[in-house]
Image 1 (cartoon, rainbow, N blue to C red):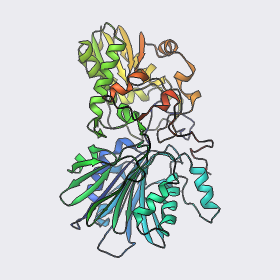
Image 2 (cartoon, rainbow, N blue to C red):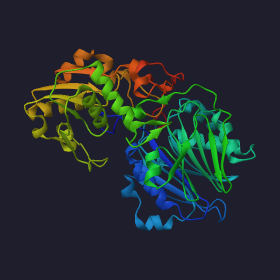
Image 3 (spheres, rainbow, N blue to C red):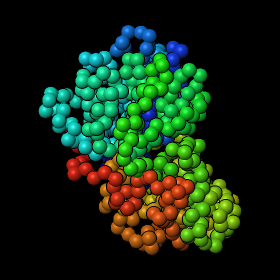
Image 4 (cartoon, one colour):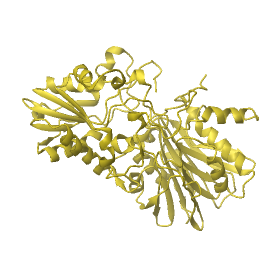
Length: 477
């Protein structure tokens, strides 16, 4: 994503987090959705929304609240009290395709001849332009610039020729290409769907007589719900008053889960498809210690995702682990950097170094990735200014060489430092004494032997043919 002032961020973002609840006992679900979205806030800080309905009330009556900002900023107590209903969906968003504006906030609510649909989506389609043109030439009028609306339109159209809403979702999925985890609210059902490659996660939970769909198991914990299972890649699950029903007719492709979910995006207390994110990061650190050892006095992690990998490195290398950084947790999307001179200090606003931990010591610094390199250079400089005699940088992912089209804002190659420079050149540019990356060959070891993941941003081996047209905001005016 390129911000409005032309500044390209030196960190990666995931597009969204989704959450849905159906309480079969008829209890209001808005507070559960609120806490679920709060637990998913790390997946998107630009906008958020909640849409609810009452399965015992009139069909098609949906109450919603959406806005730009954090969950704690958008939903006031008064708004929460007005969102009555026992079924609902919620969404947090960071834009990787489609501009950051109020009309692109989710969930999207559609009124059509069969009733209503409220839909929240995590991921990116690669065939959005073609699908959109197909709809436009049959008279569709779009209110947003996001692919979520294209998905919603196709589901609504398929519903006209389907017996059930879930059948319409399955039929629409046959037209979609790319990454999508969906939660959909119809008047009497909660539906979840995951693309056949399983790019992004979706899980099922239960609390008392309420069923939950969420992007991460950490959100189930926040809702005091029990984890039931992950939605399978290609599966459509439907929850109604009789319980859970499943359609697995599209579960027939190879799996290509986004490996960066484990490296960076997800909370460490989350599990995806049976794999612990925390354990994956510990293992990444251990692998780095095996493949890129160095004599040092302390191992430190760049918070937050670098901490577990740093601990893994320290455990494997037998070097003490230290907490060298104090992070300002209140620097969010509202932190504005209006001038170039202000950007130089932005890292210091977010992170401070503890000289007591690093002064006079040889430091191994673990981070999850290097995008442009500017942030890494600043952090290395901060450590040396605090008295570190050497700074050896280790990265718990391979070098970024290719853009991502599936819901991660890995930019184009000319904006990636590893695309233009060798490892030794990058080491020199960031001012490190040595630099080592996790190798592509060891990614499977990081996931406990799992090989069903997408590593295209490191290798260029895309599981789906990349789009031939721009899918990042082509329709913005």
